[in-house]
Image 1 (tube, rainbow, N blue to C red):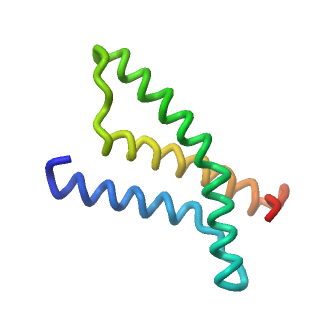
Image 2: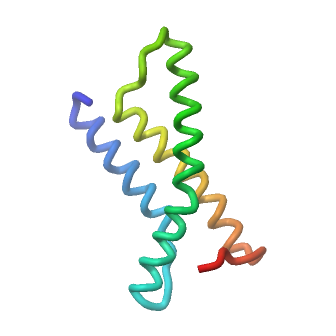
Length: 99
């Protein structure tokens, strides 16, 4: 991570990750609990898919792991996708995830 632009884009991706996982409730406590529940629900999937993608890149590029900031960007992006689809499921009225 060498340039300011890369640092800012990593921070914005992390912020978007948290924003997509935000579950607003009536009180602050319910908002925090809903958001933490959503994070804990999607983190295993995001970690698993990030690892698979990292291994694919490692094989493709001769055994070199991606830098940590790239891995975080991949993790955040996959987490955003999972959070988006879980939110669609919740807000479409198909069913609420238990808290």
